Length: 437
Image (cartoon, rainbow, N blue to C red; front, side):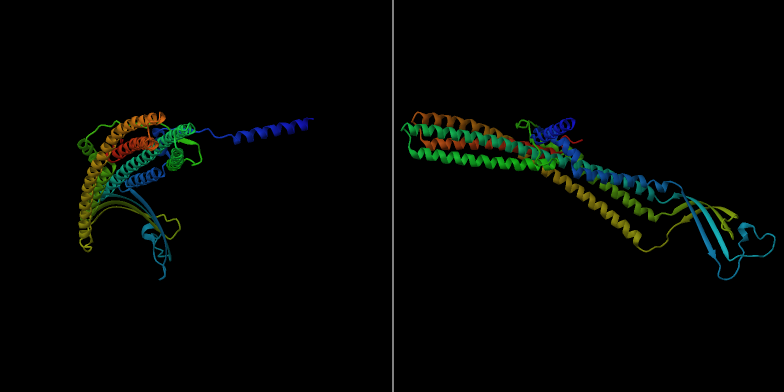
């Protein structure tokens, strides 16, 4: 009995687990802010640039080495091929005058050195690595801005298509309503068969347009999920009101700010500074190098030499002639700086062009919302009038169907204009670096 009861219990548990697994996953929605937050967390482009920033920071840390003393040890074994020789001048092993020698010589050196002066090379290398790190950090800001724009543009495209699907559904309902009215009038003998056929054509067309809009919405939603690294089969959707954006600004203020803080501008400015340091590094080759060195040398015929000699030296070196490389390397570094400055000015010029273009597009999209809103109101009045006239037998079916199509088109255009306005604002935020940190 216990065995049977155990089997029944296990069957019930397995059946319950299978039932739970087959339950549909609850759908949940996310807002534009939630989408942006997730994108900043999962974006591969951001993660890649973060690793580049880490690499540049490590390179900067490594440039501290020339400022630190250097310690080296050297050891060697020498086998004389020309007979024995004395190695007692360090070890003191031949002070008794025995005159013996050895073919084998073991040496061990300890050297501690410190660079006193190098013409500014180590300073230039360290500052150059610092500006390189700052440049990569500015590029990271630019990558973040690009990711935010892509997510917002995709989000508002999905939200707009979702609204269009709703309007297509309203158009389909209106077409079904007209068809029902037409059939009723035909059954009453006050409408022609052609009126019914035309109404059926309109209803079928509305259904096709609804399905097309639904597929377009699903495609854009899948693209947004891809940006957020969601499974396309997951039950997520977008939520949030599709409203007219309320941004107020002027071109001059946006431009003056953007040419100072936009990441690509600041990144290029850091590149100019880095190249200035590269020029100073090339210039250091024209200065002498001064190095202080303490050395202890042990040399003996034994494996562990005992005799030692200690010395302290200050080394001074200056290349009097090593070809023409120093001169032309300096000229090349100067040209790099000039080219980078021209590139910086070109970036600023492009910033101004992008802002004025995005600003005009945003103004136009806001104006389109006003115009399409007025058109929707007029088309609604026209449809209500045509529907009322046809219902009492004073109107024409063609006029009614045309007014319904005009109303559906006006509603879709209004949704499209609002979506485009939000996308235009996202573009303006990107090119003008609005809200950037």
